Image (cartoon, rainbow, N blue to C red; front, side, top):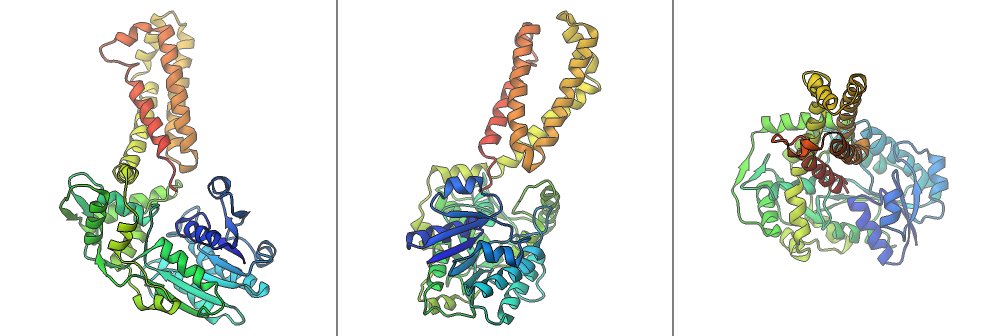
Amino acid sequence: MRVAVIGAYGLVGSYVSARLLADGHEVVGVGRDLVQARRRFPAIDWKQADLAATGVEAWTALLAGATAVINCAGALQDSPRDDLRAVHVEGVRRLADACRVLGARLVHISAAGVEAGGPTAFNTTKHEAEALLEDASGLDWIILRPGLVLAPAAYGGTALLRGLAGFPGFVPVVHGDSRVQVVGAEDVAAAVARCLECDAPTRTKLDLVSDETVTLSDLTTRLRGWLGLPAAPVLDLPPALARITAVGADVLAFLGWRSPMRSAALAQLRMGVRGESGDAARLGLTLRSLDVLLATMPSGVQERWFARLYFAKPMILSCLFAFWLISGVIGLTVGFDAAVRTLSVAGVEPGQASAAVVGGSLVDIALALLVAHRRTAALALKGMLLVTAGYLAGGAIVRPDLWLDPMGPLIKSIPAAVLALAALAVLEER
């Protein structure tokens, strides 16, 4: 069977695609950014399209020959990159129209617990998408509503939970009493595979959640044990502190950073993630519990590295931003004369020395501004490495005595370069 998966390189989409390939299906993967996707999943036939912008005719042509379409695409919150209504409502409407034309079954991945009048745009738009599919005539559809998805891979909310579980000394949580039901990514993929069978229940929506309901505090505690870290007390943070953090994360979203600590994520955590555990039986499935899921994906050193680096990563990037910005500003202001004198002592003409200081300071500021934006962060980090190498080489030629200066103006650049190298190594989000 030829099956198209929208959002095939996402957390859920990648497990769905892997399962369908293992079952012998021909998989067409659809997404916006395909360079890395093609390297990671060479067996998939990749097509580029944006659910928020692709029209019915374009979808009909792109999905030609597909017997079924699995929609795993979605977004958490509005940002310059994501428009929830365009993705969750209008995009699903056009995709459904194309499936009706093609006679293809549409399996739509929604979320457990979404309902009318919810507190977030995520909740509202997801519910609207479900409603429009339920009202669609002549369309073969199934809606799957997973709970909190756990997988060996980590992204989004589950990545945040791992970071909290790996926090040194204690486990910080927000809304620790909120109750959630989990589901394994492989179990979601199994449900999708079952939906492709001829006798699968259609024109229905099914929750995919395990029987057990756990609190967020209990969940992070179990994740900490799964990581192999020593037990630590759980500290339930004040909601006001969480809201301040969320505001900062919302601002960073306009720079391209997709933090799972945004206001929509906190609101969803406050609501909890609940569903009807008996629905999976209608697909002939028994979903694994949290303990079974953790037992079947044993952690290794890479999971501990990820958990410990989760909050270190934004600190590293913030430190680099401040270091290069402050260095540039100082070079243009209070440190300008001293920097010019340093070059002049080595025989550099005053005019050339001034130009070098101004040029170097502007480069420092430019690198700081570039590293603050997600799209240009990698370029900025590479630039920091090159500029630092240039500073060190130039210093060795013009003022080699500075290597022995007690204040270490040249030696101090080396740790900054190593920090940029570390940030470059952990920059990818998925």
